[in-house]
Length: 130
Image (cartoon, rainbow, N blue to C red; front, side):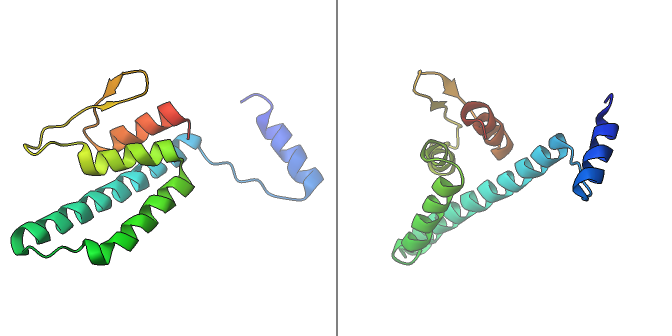
């Protein structure tokens, strides 16, 4: 970048600080990985709760309901209501009983299918501008 290093050095000299420049692409890739891990964990928790009920008829929701509410509120706080609704749709309703991937339909009627949490992340970045 023409002149970037000179401007950086001048600002560092004037302000008496040392700037650390991060590559935005690396940061976004790290965020996508963390987001994907989070979604995978949520899916595993939902599946575990369902499997416990199916195998033993023990309803864990009396215990877990408060935790799920806290997770929902955290997602709304970190993202937005619309974004958290898409995330919860992905976790709970993306697949039908046969395991087929269903599409999510936006307010314009456009349908999107997400095979992986990384697909969901890229959609959220595109649609909601995070």
